[in-house]
Amino acid sequence: MEKHPELVRHGPVGHGDLFSDEIASGDVVVVVDGIYHHRLAVRHKEILDAMARGITVLGAASIGALRAAELDEFGMIGVGRVYDWYRTGVFDGDDAVSVAHGETGSLVGINIPLVNLHTAFQAACDAGILRQEAARPMMARLEHEYYPLRTVERVLVIARECGQTAFADWYRERLGADPHAFDQKRADALEAFALAEKLDALPREATPRTGSGERDWRTEYHRRWRNLFATAASSLHQRLAYQQIFNPGFPDVWWDFLHHSSGPASSGSPDGFRAHVLRHLGPRAAEWLDDPELRSRITAVICPLPDLADPHEADLLLRGESARDRARGADWLERTRHHLDTHPGRSLAHIKEDVCATLLARIWGVGTDGGLATECGRRGFPSPAHATGALRPFVIGYLAGARAAKTSGEHGHA
Image 1: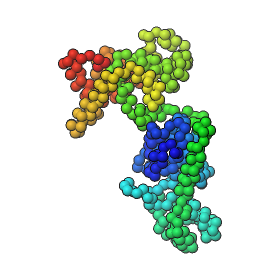
Image 2: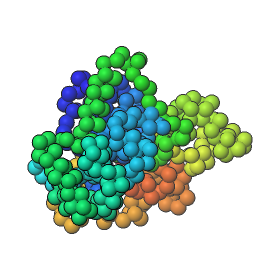
Image 3: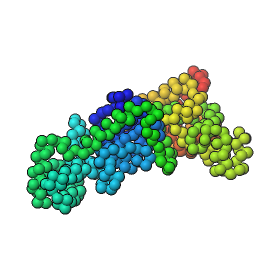
Image 4: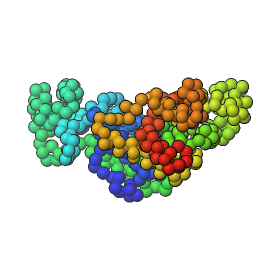
């Protein structure tokens, strides 16, 4: 916790926040609150990914408690009464912790979450103000209210309509003396922060290890998500696309990547890749592995999505990149952005797929029929549609750069 005090903040977490460069293996993260409903909330796989990177993740109070109840079997640590209520089935809807608030200024809540009302009812029963059988119909009424409407005033109205005037007076008096009197979410958050400080003070090897359960959650979708939100990977995918399209030697780079990547197509060694190929394609594929001319049969079938958030995989795929490549790719992308900015109403979607396919065939020196599909596999593209999509952001800059290069006699990957 003390390592990164700037990460202790009052604002809600959102989609992609756990990919911050400032959060690393050995750190402790507490997920308490988050934005959802009209914006993307913190995702389950974002938390799973963080734990797989050696980060201890605690959840409490609000969406943190909800995620912990869903992911505790994978190693997320749930803290507090709200977490226990979700885990044991007292509550099962996310509206039990939902709080409406404005989009600007203070994020002070408008309504009282059900979990806090449950705490108030329990306290009233313990104090002899309310009986359990009288609390149930009030909770049932409140559960049927749309969550932003569960304000203090509405709670008081419902209590009086249910004949519980004594409770209404007691509840209003207690909140007047202490606005946090029944704030279970706040109490659970403080408990989670206290536990996080204790865990962070432990030697790294003594920090509880988090796991990913027995089920494999590292799907292709997860990799796509990492590539989009991981800070480094968000720019690497365009650098990789440049290499896939414009580097004449990339088929060899891709073949070596298949052999040595840590992805599902390999165990990190040539033998592991060979076993994978034979298991999926049969023993006859052994001759394809040893014949460079037959590699395209394998790459046409096996095309894993690289995990660019993994430095090892990124280094394997960009090993042939030069400073000139990076400069040229950045220049072409900037030309495209400038063109679109100065021509309102135009977008990359206006660049037709058949135009991109023709350009790819010209760049690679293949036909637009079966030859294009074969070359896509050799370069790590699952299909021509994926390849044309990768080319599209470069098209305008590429054509302008190609004309300039032709005029000056410049040569290179393009």
